[in-house]
Length: 357
Ligand code: OGA
Ligand code: MN
Image (cartoon, rainbow, N blue to C red):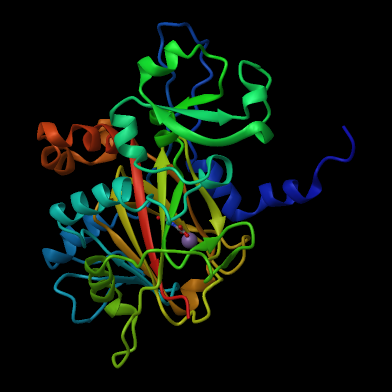
């Protein structure tokens, strides 16, 4: 090969990248037979900070691990900070089980609705009611130019748009048209944006893009949760939110969120569904990151100096023992909620709320 990619080799060597590799999902390379399910490689979780057990010992007036301090603030539950990470706050179990269910439902039904954008926009344009379509086993089919009808080699240029059809309708049409099932699209939903729309290609907010405001109840909740990271006289103004959807094996690579004008304002980041590992690095990728568990209902705040720290999510856990979603499963046990239950048993959702200006 021509000169191996030295930039990516350098990247491999950073402490952040090493930690990502340590926690990322790999499968055992045992010989795969059709009957044997792929087994994840075991991972050493002994160095992962666990704020659930920190909260339990704090509530029993026991000692906190060195470097972890309780934060005095107006919130009705304990908030912790980390000694050498100023501006970072962890609120274990900040959301009630009802709030978790509510925001999981909204994240799947209303947040991805146009004019809000999702990762599917670039290829498919606006998609309405994806979650319902997946539940009803619908198929998204390309509307093609009439002269490309029945031509199996149509390119995306010939596609005029996409429309959902019932399964039986598509089989009667023959299979010459491009199509994809709604359930695969739902599985491949990676993000949606609320409020001011973030333009990923330009890495910036495009205020001219049409958008719906962040729902008022979510704004009020974010304002309340942001309080520990806000100067006492100021109010947090939620203007944009990014919703991330993770399935098994998905990760969010190390990054900074530096496109907002005022870094003194926190990012309020809520975890829903399966447990994940969060890496909080320093200002350089070379700084070794701290690993911590994020469970459904946990909230983290990143403000001030923490806004300049690399962070990411290298792993989510969907197995019963590690996912830790039993209360959610109970809450979603009603038949009407079976499609939410099915989704969340193998997924994690993160809603992070920002003040842009
Ligand atoms: C982000 C982010 C963290 C998470 O979307 O910028 O850092 O917990 N998300 O998913
Ligand atoms: Mn981020």
